[in-house]
Image (cartoon, rainbow over all chains, first blue to last red; front, top):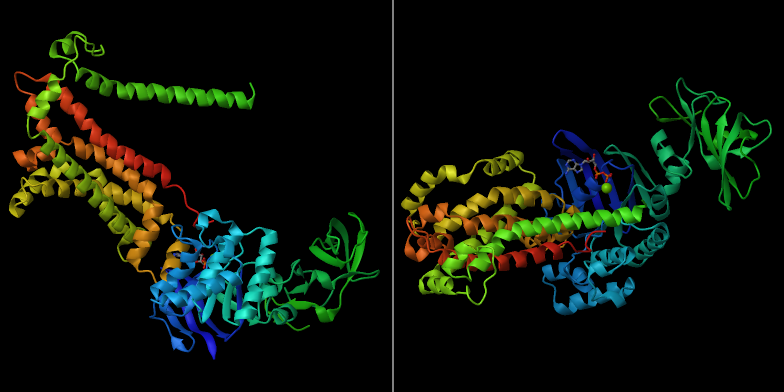
Length: 333
Length: 279
Ligand SMILES: Nc1ncnc2c1ncn2[C@@H]1O[C@H](COP(=O)(O)OP(=O)(O)O)[C@@H](O)[C@H]1O
Ligand SMILES: [Mg+2]
């Protein structure tokens, strides 16, 4: 069964079209990540799915039922917000229990589900505290707990890690992945961070300006981007784009080569000077100004002794490079 | 001069200015209170002197308390002030929530219409209000005053509160909606506690003008059993003789309840600014 089906969903605020004909399915148990730059409409799409905004056109189906006219609480979804959005006047336990109380579940069921979530998220020591007495990471876990107790058909996460510091972000990311495995629930996860998208997703949906650019598994998108935007958005450091390429391109076209697919090689087709070196220990990033006055990044695995100012020659395999036409669409070469 | 010392100097100067202002503002109140404890002769001979054994007198308070209705006036003023504040805050907050939270046709127009009330003094409409009150039979009731003051205070309340409500996190309200809270519970349980400082501000701004108003009590509710304190105190001010002892005592007593209300609200002002809901 499909957990979610969107058909021709559009959303306008006044004259501004924020979402344009979104068609999408989320299979049962799938972890889908919506990724795209800030302001591209990811949160709006999530809010339309949740029922917090009405779709201007199109249908939203959750678990096979059209829910366009169903209020958020009855859609069988749970949502985790970037700002945690915990109820300030309630304890951790009551924050989690509130939705079940609203559904008039019996006390024993509430008790059981809350304590299960508390255990799963390791919040045992904090159940009687107020949100204001918790750290950012703990608050986010409570927010996740509040979603778990509802036992929803579909989890919605809106940039849940953006307010956490780097170390905590990595830990929480892993916890969310584990949560997905344990609950085997359908999840939609919104982020602008391509690392989160690549590491968490079964399926990535790349959005730009309210349109779906491409849908696919992380590796499909990495190996086979449909256009220049997707190619540049996924992968870190980002793909190099060269207008003055050493191969035959369609008129006005662009060559794309990922930094990790370039190597230093005598007699290579691209010549340039090193302008900056980043030594990360595990790998080394060289920033290079080519002889054609274009900038590119090279990622070398391991440590490398190339110094700033050195002249280098770079080579790549045509099989790992991409060509894009003037409309930024992928073309064969 | 280094930064730390300059800072201390600035702090000192700021405190100095504030203390000076406090003294100036409190001086008339102080004069009223000390003179209310003096006999008539000393009030005029040495208005700035503290009451001493010779000049001390409770005659003013005795007159005021013997004037049997004084407690009734007190009660009337209290009912009118508290009642008006309650309705201003309730309706002001509800209107502000609607304006801040819901997108509907004419939202901006409605906001402007409500803001118009800030610029047009309600007293311009006194005659029409009086006619309305006569027709509805509300003349000489406390309701007449409460309704008028609610109308008078609402525009500014809506204006201030909607600005604050716009700042309450959307995520919090949306979390409530997903958890199945009704819009009323979202309003009363989630939003109102977070705008409590703004509510206290609105209450404080509205309280004093209502408590002190003489105009509407005189016109809409001059009857003995609904007189407010300010109106009631006028009996001591005659065309030819004024009982200054009684006037000063009545004024001193009138300060107390406002002071109590103010303390309640200002504590809210300070307490309200804490919550760990968002970030
Ligand atoms: N309530 C609203 N009214 C008007 N415009 C909005 C509203 N909500 C979002 N937008 C606009 O929609 C666009 C997408 O917003 P959003 O979905 O929050 O982007 P993202 O989450 O991808 O950063 C933005 O340009 C934003 O200004
Ligand atoms: Mg967003």
